[in-house]
Length: 492
Image (cartoon, rainbow, N blue to C red; front, side, top):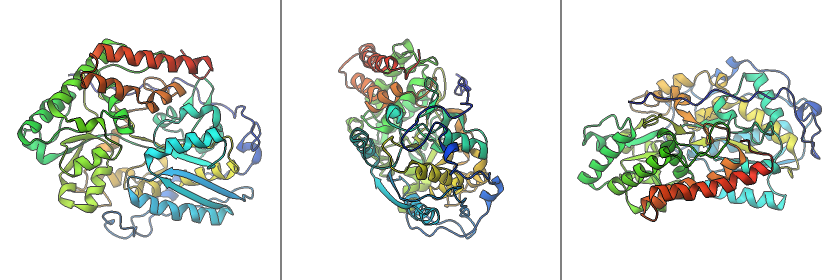
């Protein structure tokens, strides 16, 4: 049995000072020159103050008053003005967006900035972002849940914001740092204040039928149990093989657990290996024995919907499907349980399900306000975690000291109350998309062009052998890496 492995420790130094990147809106010293960032560090204890209770109706209510964290506000050191436009995904936990819209409006009134927020379906964010960046006009601040590293040449360096956050709240979680920092250029192409784990979600009643009430612990367990569930009940497993985010995450979890990877720690293409071929062969068998053709056309919501509807026994996803079920059908919600990353022959790793990628395009008309808001948002991460119903976890853990208490005793009525306690060590079994290297622009393009789901899918459909599918993926990935390496944005 393979031991559980964790991602490597940092290999790149923290930038010691703000670097380069003069823009029409900020000089070489970035935020330090403008002086608009508040310089007072807020004590972590302030974020633990409790007052009030959520009142949105997107799901179950908190158990009583005194659960919602009190929000804090630090006045900008210099006067802000003008407008700030934000493009962001429609959160899978609707309560979050209802809270966020009021939260950002309150900040705008206090900071003297007129704020507009546009929530769009997560699948539409990359297209909107690409269109605006190409046109060099659009939103000042864009948030997405998948890599934006391929846009590094067209966005502002966020090193100044990260350094200020580190000064206030300690060192950023390495998982989030590697998801937003390019060691080759020493720039933070995105700001990553939070993340979401990607556990296995399973229907306990179905797995009890095959003698696994606690769900699968390994990829071998998944194949054996899911195949038997399908044989007995007709209900398939739900690992996607489609050009979408969840299928991309699942592909990486499977690949890493078998010992494969897109790149090595030095950013050299490493996809064509015996380990990758073995992972593709496994996925082909899982598809044939435990899945259906539906997985080839899924979108990011499809596996959630299948699990809740009883049309899937197991999916790789965040806790959002369960939260939805808790608000719509409590019996189904109580039947959904979780397992951490499945063990493979070499490791037990899952990709972070959501990467909070906030970027400020170079065309942004009010970057000062965008960066100031991001620090305000980060300072209030206890409220982010709470109103996302434990979906969004902090990149600066010191900010949310009450997190373990919430995971042990869910404010939103989990049964059992400690159903989410397994997330306490989720960092140890989670990796950034570029693992074992950083999420560089080549990794971002590989992700967003869905090379890995296509590789697994072609073999599963019988359109290519496992070795042929891997070789085809290698050809595509090498071209992507060569392009970015020629531009000085990828190492190796």
